[in-house]
Length: 135
Image 1 (cartoon, rainbow, N blue to C red):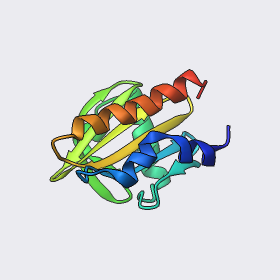
Image 2 (image 1 turned 90 degrees about the vertical axis):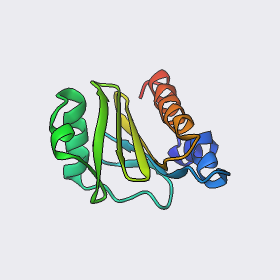
Image 3 (image 1 turned 45 degrees about the vertical axis):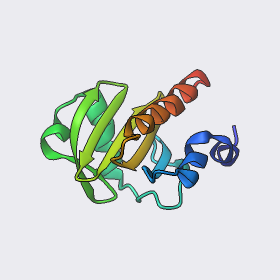
Image 4 (image 1 turned 60 degrees about the horizontal axis):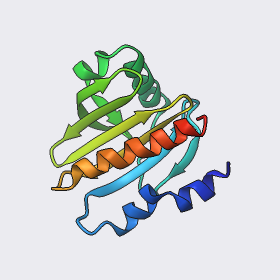
């Protein structure tokens, strides 16, 4: 699969640039190895430590719930973890949804608005699509 094509074709990324209520802020698909598969231009640069902490939280929830989730140095409070599946976090005015697949993390950062739940659903759909494709 060509990730640039996936990036261009997938509605999550198109929606990010045309969102009328301004809910979407940034999104990325990042391999478990840290390689970026696709991302919006404004997605924060994750450190290896941040990525590893996210992966550990999916396997053994609790550390980030206590210490906080960091994305590009920005701290979020973890509000929910479904082990091996989905993580949600927030800070004043923003939310994050992270969907884990067998090979990647799908991460969406968005402003809290009336349509924020749609943002959650889109991130999860992207992850589900990758899972169906064997990723």
